[in-house]
Amino acid sequence: MGSDPAGKIWSEWYAWHPVLPIDDSVFWLETVYRRESPEGLWQYRSFRPEFERRQALTDIPVCPGA
Image (cartoon, rainbow, N blue to C red):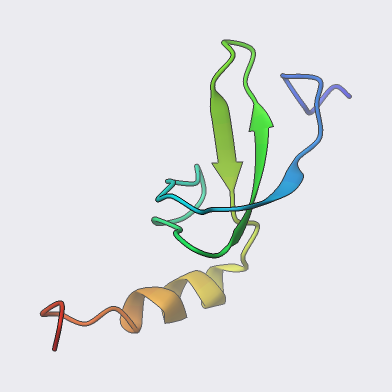
């Protein structure tokens, strides 16, 4: 458990409201992983590979609604 500062593992969670993972962009209505920080706040991670993150960013329209 030395690499996990909160002493807890990441658990799968469905982001039913917008969340900002510490390793990715905003997630909403999709699965992410979360754990409680030592301060009692939720931390989120996506664990997506770098190429999937880049692909997701290129799929965002320049003009929302376009």
